[in-house]
Length: 173
Ligand SMILES: *[C@@H]1O[C@H](CO)[C@@H](O)[C@H](O)[C@H]1NC(C)=O
Ligand SMILES: *[C@@H]1O[C@H](CO)[C@@H](O)[C@H](O)[C@H]1NC(C)=O
Image 1: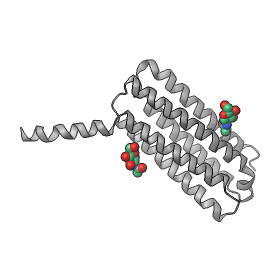
Image 2 (image 1 turned 90 degrees about the horizontal axis):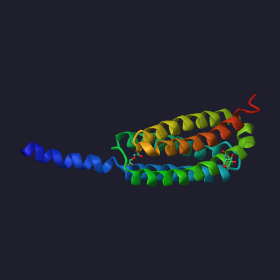
Image 3 (image 1 turned 180 degrees about the vertical axis):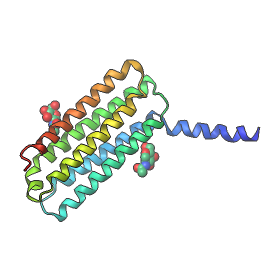
Image 4 (image 1 turned 60 degrees about the horizontal axis):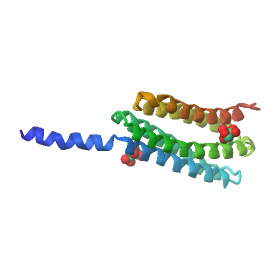
């Protein structure tokens, strides 16, 4: 009797943590770090020391994407409303990713000069893979009739990453 009384609130806590809102929150964190990465790259003068915050934000971004995947995997299956709310958050993230990758492409010459472009390319590859894992984890929790929408959102993000990855592969010596 006492034992079940203890377990019930624990069960409640787990479902409160692992829900649509937790996924929306993780995507919000990813969007805001993506924005900070954009600021770090666009304000960078091209010096080696100034590149450190860029690497820092990039590492933080990877950690936050992976944390989002953990949150999505722990989630219960999502309701239609939750899935639509998450889709809205992903659309905002797409804008942020597009802006940041455009800035990163525009800064390639500066990275080239410091021989840092291969590091950026590696990070872009890692971030694309992490983003694919996050997308797959979310899609697995989305109602059947919205899975095509979820895949479409992921394909758009992948396209952005591919544009940036191609730009960094080009002219590689
Ligand atoms: C991971 O995500 C969860 C849910 O969004 C959040 O509460 C937690 O603070 C995050 N952990 C880290 C290390 O960012
Ligand atoms: C950003 O979006 C525009 C419009 O869809 C697209 O043409 C451009 O290639 C995207 N940028 C990147 C880096 O993918």
